[in-house]
Image 1 (cartoon, rainbow, N blue to C red):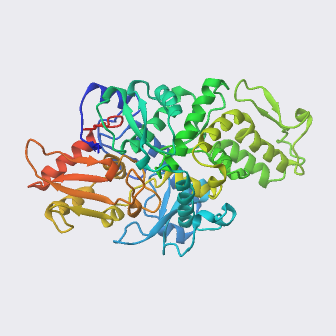
Image 2 (image 1 turned 90 degrees about the vertical axis):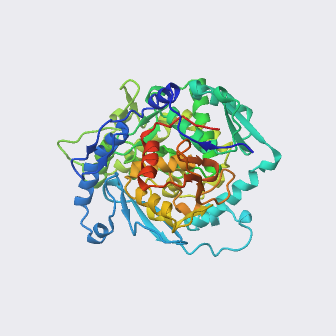
Image 3 (image 1 turned 120 degrees about the vertical axis):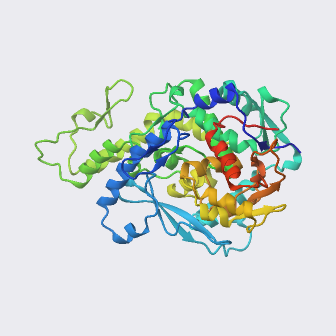
Length: 517
């Protein structure tokens, strides 16, 4: 079996590949002027800017919300969302984080106790109409049962996806046409053909290809007109055969990620998500795409406009391509919006923005997605649940991490080195925790059920494991096996050495550096 271990490598290719993905570092300590959150020198400019954009917006939302009970549940609000419930865990505690939308469209994550499923019988025979009534955890079991019907066991062999770091998007586009995405897929880099992937690279590959696809210069997606880091299909991207092939590729990547229970590091807008699950749009969906337009339509919806001296609008909307007027109905330039027809106007606007404007691109995306996961299977989720499924948790619960870790070799939870390890971990901020989690597992986000449901590369439950190895000055660094969620931790003689070796990882740019041995 191949080895999926990762060590740090320092070379020009690593620096180039990391920085061309937009991960330039701030290089000095910084503090948020609003919440005083600390950013260490290795923090990326994108992370700092995202935090600053969201911090003030989130605080405004909290001020606007007069619910004292909600205020009392807030443990973490400096990241552009609110976390409710207890932000810690105990061994064997079963829970699921549930996402809902609060005031001013601020996401709220709440920790809900889970008793586990009481369902019996063959889930595979249950129709989607019944499964839609399940709670999220049972929907997940049903979804896995449906996708496992399509899975070709790894014992039948694996397909290999040959790609190049220097031309990641194009080589992926060509290579993915030659493989069966229902089989186990092993990643082979043209630059490192001697590497034998044991399966752990799929998570890292999905992370990398998503970063590449959503780069601004590729023009396929654009950031939404909101404070959150949400992406929409770019309506200005030309409807060419080549671009439609790219959107089809993106659908395949998202489908493979869901098929393998891997979280996707990019959040998509709700117009696209609702088309995945075949649900109608509503005005609140627009809040994830264009907040200024949402505010305008919300005003029209909630206020009388008949006889207004300041409001005179018609059933037209500007084209994002050239600014020309698009008539939403026949002779729309002559049909004035009134109290009687404003709901029709809002519905037509949503249909235009979310569907008709990007119709061929959405069709290409869905065709790729449905090659991996059947259309009906995806309809089991609500839009919030689909976000939970695709994106996982946007934060790390360290208490949950520690409570669901296991130890091998000399180590147990009372061993001095393990005590030092968790003491050092508790000093890290959220970005550092996420980066270290990425180093250990190949993923950047957890599933909403937390650390208790971490999986190996073959979909089996595989908790985070710390294994002891001999310490020597010649080989003193940390080493991870991402396909097994395993960290090799040397038996350090001092806490200071352990901390320094861990900080070396956090200071390094290993995005795009697989470090396979």
